[in-house]
Amino acid sequence: MTTLLNNLTTISAFAPATCANVAVGFDLLGFAIENVGDIVTLTRRDDNQIIIDKIDSADELPLDPDKNTASAVVNFFCQDLNIETGFSIHIKKGLALGCGMGGSAASSVAALVAVNAFLEKPLTNPQLIKYALHGEKVAVGTAHSDNVIPCLYGGITLTQSLNPIRILELPVPDIYVVIVHPHMRLDTKASRAVLSKEILLLDHIKQSAYLAGFISALYTKDLILLQESLHDCIIEPKRARLIPGFAAVKNAALENGALGASISGSGPSVFAFAPNQERAIDIANAMQSAFADFNLASDQYVSLISKQGAQVL
Amino acid sequence: MTTLLNNLTTISAFAPATCANVAVGFDLLGFAIENVGDIVTLTRRDDNQIIIDKIDSADELPLDPDKNTASAVVNFFCQDLNIETGFSIHIKKGLALGCGMGGSAASSVAALVAVNAFLEKPLTNPQLIKYALHGEKVAVGTAHSDNVIPCLYGGITLTQSLNPIRILELPVPDIYVVIVHPHMRLDTKASRAVLSKEILLLDHIKQSAYLAGFISALYTKDLILLQESLHDCIIEPKRARLIPGFAAVKNAALENGALGASISGSGPSVFAFAPNQERAIDIANAMQSAFADFNLASDQYVSLISKQGAQVL
Image (cartoon, rainbow over the protein chains, first blue to last red):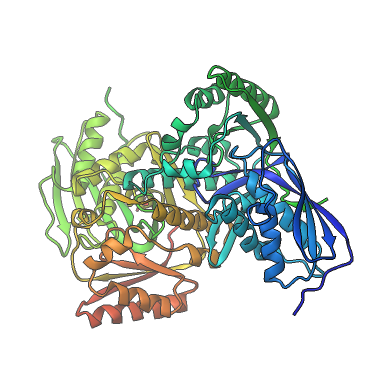
């Protein structure tokens, strides 16, 4: 049976940058930020082909539809749902490759939200997840959900289970996020390679206390508890060495009043939480200055946690 | 400086039985149950001695004040606060030794709450914790907090940190608890010995998702999420073999509508959550019957989660 499409010819969608792991929830937690992300425009074709028309990006990205995350997702979506049409894809990257802000997730989720909007009866977010995960698999080799889920849903999300799918949308605190992206590239694969397969039970217990404290802090709006809980004793110590100046950058954030700071996703970007915008700006500047001491130019992003996920423009 | 006492001569306190770990929070989570626990009565003496007058218990317990958890706590409390009086201690054990229901914690916390009530200005719960932990150290060799904290506070508690002390009192759901205690003894030390010092990172991630789901379920009163989250992939698989028939007992609980079941504390007792009292009774009977198939007589306890912790009678 062929899935019915509406009569639109062109649809654009935006998908936000995201910060995965959030210190306390490796591979589980993530949140979306405002104003930064990728835009994907799909235009219907008569010839049933899915091609990449154009990529606006500072990085070299594969135009081969099988290797590009956006086209791979559209392709999988069309095959799986038996959609009989082709698409030209235009990708505007707002995010650098390998920056730890969910760049590949943003492209695939934007493409997915766009192609879904061509359906007479669009799928729901939970139904879209499997396609978005396919995109991550193409991009990094494994179907990690920690960027695609907050990218799709917005807010702060926790992946309680992928089989069956159980996503928790956690309460979003009124705090500011700072993300500083140093101009270097760190592949997710390299960042995974430094992790040990085993961890100490004692570290598991300690980290569990931080996670439980963080989740409670979101529900009770207790920023002091949030601050006391925002620590990573398992992943950050392993990955910190991959980011020149990480300790100094984190320290700069904390000394300027951050509620906590850690690696954004698999790095090299570093995120911090701030109680208000004024603090956030100071923190962002101090973090950039600390990276500069290690001869790394950087970009800063300051925003609220975005309550909106990917959406049609 | 000598701490001032009021003019009472005898004080009794009750401290409830508790279930530690609660499947998802090894060494962190615990809850109190209703009606079952230990009662400790302290009577002032003129001779500055702390002695154990009497123990009503099915088990043999040490009368030596240095080895008994109740007197050790009273002794430490009096020395630390420079209290110039003696006490005769009478302990009524409502809990069997090594049953996994916080028996040693109940004795030491009841003694502590009683001795604290002799002060002109009694200490607060957070201030009492260090004395209660001392009792656990005497009883099992290490200062684990997972029974003493819920015993002292009541409800469901999470020990986010002991240094500094940060206890979270989590929302208590309207569910019933079943605890079935098979008549065998399992020492906490033996139960700790079967645990590995290292665990798989993948298991840490999985267990973190369960913990976060459970905490969220308490705040959102989502019993389906609670049910989906109440799993232990780290500790239970190691300890299950120490409890004859554990798999059958757990299965009996789940087949009779339990929201989840796992080992209570370090065992051998097994706890289950039930959506209502009727289910709880069926579950308790089925669990006892399953233990009986392994030639183990048992006791059952069915109650709400107790919102009250230890208290003066």
